[in-house]
Length: 353
Image (cartoon, rainbow, N blue to C red):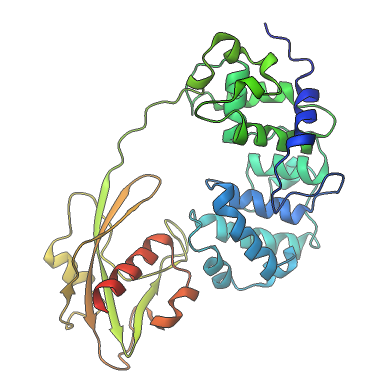
């Protein structure tokens, strides 16, 4: 078996020279701010560093402390989050900030167990905040770390079923000293050297300890169970204008895109486009002459594809909004519209102007 006794020492030595400069990362020798660590880790779930960085900087500028974020209206937080996806994270982010501010005096707990009690904080985030912000020994396992560990130990069983084993193996490598730096070093290694395709084993600081490198199978790991094809759902979105404003409505507070703004639409269902009767029943105003716009809007969620056609209508001036609210077209950028709805807005404007 490969000797891994100096794994952490070699990795930390490499990190000291090659660490990435990231907006949420404290400079060498400085203590990390728990608020920044927590905020970044929530944003980085299911999101890349490149995508998360501008959102992080925007949030930090608007809400520099957990108290500022806790006191912000939820609608403002959702609007600032729009486009980052997985919107339950934004609602949980706000709930967690309020919990920390109101119940914990604005101070984050410093150990995994207490962190796990916070809204929206799971095992990964709790370990990351404990290690990076508070120097606690904790095993931080994200996708990058899973890949590194699968290769170091030549684990050929597929994800996601092998996740518990990879976490247990990762724990055997976690050092007692500099756990926060070590956690970030593992992430950096996976992001820059031990990459999904064409891993750079020749320059890897821990290739001596990697069983997959020795066996010549590093690029094939981690194995993954084949994913089932995603189904396609269909719907019709209603672009209704009145006096240079457009009708929006708020989605239910829980569930897909919970609490976000949307252009009204039929339910999104599989089995083909909705019937004319279903479209008429879902229209926000039945007496409006609706005009189908050419083309459609395509969007992919984690579990399904969505194909939306858009139909446009005019309600006249000052028409009451029974199920929604009017927003001036020039103010749409400030609304908490998820990515799919921003696509609908662009499509409608492209074909009605």
